[in-house]
Image 1 (cartoon, rainbow, N blue to C red):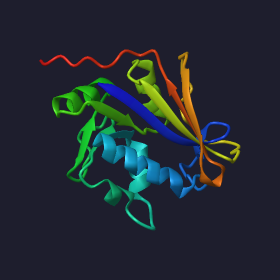
Image 2 (image 1 turned 30 degrees about the vertical axis):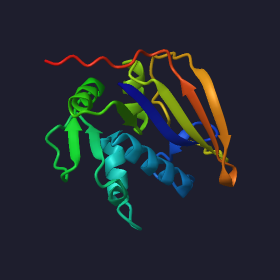
Image 3 (image 1 turned 90 degrees about the vertical axis):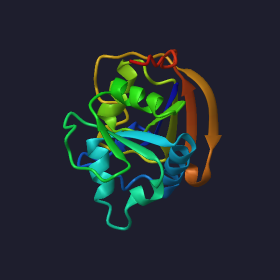
Image 4 (image 1 turned 180 degrees about the vertical axis):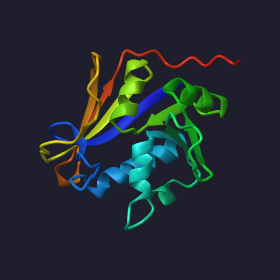
Amino acid sequence: MRTTLFMAMSLNGFIARPDGEEDFLSMAHWADYVRFAHMYGNVIFGRKTYEAVMNWTDHNGFDDLLGVTKIILSNDVNMEVPPEFVVLPSPHEAMHFLAESGFDHAFVCGGSQVNTAFLKEHLINEIILNIEPVLVGEGKRVFAEDDFLEKLTFTSKQERENGIVTLTYQTDAPEFEHHHH
């Protein structure tokens, strides 16, 4: 099973302001996110991302993901969530759950902690980044600061509307092998 990580970020690598606000990201990213989620049938993100989207005032973003299996990575596996959401404690648990549910591709759109957790477990095969033409002074990065070094292979670039550039890279990580218990 392959895993794609997709994130939108400022040119200098920030995905949100310190308070989690994403006001510098355009709606073009949400359209991509929704398209990928429906294409793969699933999406994995963290509790903070879940809470941020649930708190959107203009519309409930998750309405755009009806029929998509939504996995929240959280240590609090007993947190109350609506149907269509599954709470799991680790990247490996998420991968096993998706494999057992018949998926052949996992889609990670995390939050810094989740992205780094998957990267460190060598569970990301492809990284797609939407680079917004903006610089943000501080906030949350695509990957949380941690002890890792991952060499990437550049595969493509696409220049988009509004000055957004989409970059795609492959990692050396092997595809996830699922073993039935």
